[in-house]
Length: 319
Image (cartoon, rainbow, N blue to C red; front, side):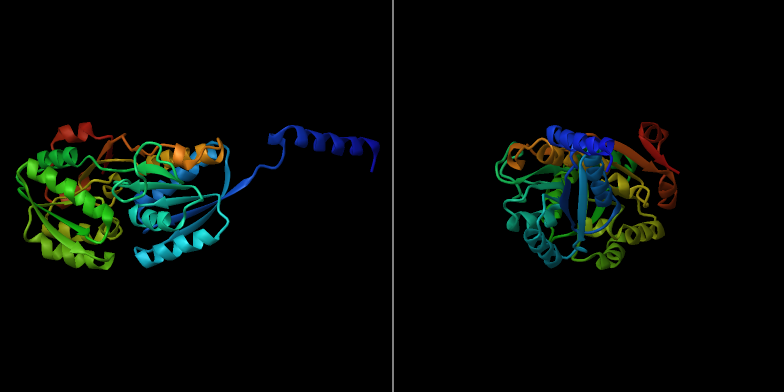
């Protein structure tokens, strides 16, 4: 080895010892558990990853999907407990509940959870102590119902389908019922246990209602196209609360961009991994920024002529 090369090696080693950033950056191991795959929850994870990337954090992800089955969610939680993880990102209420029951030391960041306090994830939305923090996606049901009713004022009987075994859906239904009642609307409910039941549930509902409003329910959203088909065939206006439902066939949604929900959760992970904060010292937060998305093709298919003012109001128009 030449003297110049020797000096170069010595110099590089010295710099690496003196300047921490010059050493190899750590690759963090993050477990991701998701109750089911659909566009909103998938966008959530993409936003989460981008937040870490923007912060210069290198991460290796272990992706696990419960496929809508709580026994799978519990098995994933047990797997993660045995793994040497730096952090867990739990997406949606059921998977988050499964995680916090098992993982008590590794930091957990939840997202796309309607009511994290009611679900038992945290004691308060402020700094809650322990190892859990995250982002709630509680929908503005009163504003949504008001807008949808204004779009189709002739609809007096509204219907919905939801999974009564999902704590997120049960909580969402209490808010949706209250909103419907406030505006003097009847709300007819059909429950399902799996996404395979959604099409039959939609058929049983269609002849009894004037329009459909789907709450925050992962079981139904994962089979949304089967619901769209029934609404198109029966000329029943369909509205969702998640904006990802609009390109899939609902007329409109006033809701959140789930990429931003995940990005916000990712910023909390950055505070934990990069800034050294305890998850219990990082407050949970509510998603606030809303956008209106409308689908003109879906409106036509379901027999609705949207007033021009809603098209002008929209942040995004699907044609």
